[in-house]
Amino acid sequence: MDKYKVVIVDDDELSLENLTFALAKDERFSVEGIAHNARQGKKLIVQIRPDLLFLDMELPDMTGMQLLQEMRDDLSRTMRIVFYTAYDKYMIQAIREAAFDYLLKPFDDQELKDILDRFVKQATALKPEPLFSNVPVSSRQTFIVFTPTNDMRALRPSEIGFFRYCSERKQWEVILNNQPPLALRRGMTAEQITQFSPCFVQIHQSYIINIDYLMIIKESKCLLYPPFDKVTELLVSRKYKKELQERFCL
Image (cartoon, rainbow, N blue to C red; front, side, top):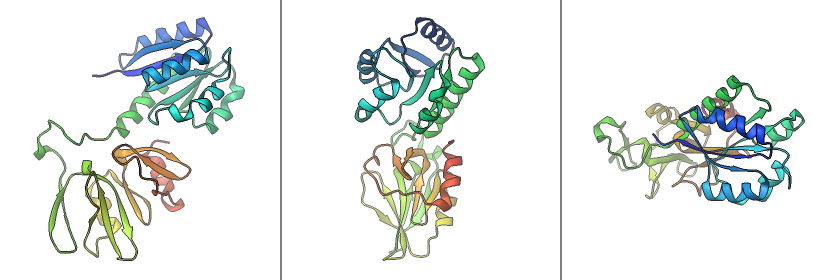
């Protein structure tokens, strides 16, 4: 099993040593790099592209927040950030900056374990099913949909990014990987679509997403993993926000 890559950016040697030692005891994680200031941290983050970043709030050359602001365009959307600091005065700001979590120095072993367990749970839940797999086709979930011309089409959830309702034609269409949208026959309802698979979750009266491809919810919009990462139309309505938050482990 591949380990999750970790980078730590902190200038406090004792805190670095304690965190590195604690992470080394968890076989799910591998500390790939350590930086003592923001300049070194930037290089490591770009080079390693960690899954999990432990970032001190007060570094010698700038704050952790400033580092993130300067690197905003270079950060992976899948990377999770844990602010690691001795000062709880930064907690509200960290939350506003969409930090994954917040770890106070000196940390409690159980507190760190809870953070790591939650990270693994979320990372596992959000990992898309591979589009090509050695798993026999018979063991994958497959279902049949009908087109407007009454043709039958077999689909797997891994092929589907989302469903979109076309109000002009009054019918749903399914957005597939590297294929034109496939129109479904009239009369197909959102309830019927969501019953096909638990990974189909309605976020708006006009959109149903495959939650296995959900990367992040930003400014009330769902951003998806590739190959659907260019889609920007997936707005989350208030009606469905609570259910989506529960499914997304927010």
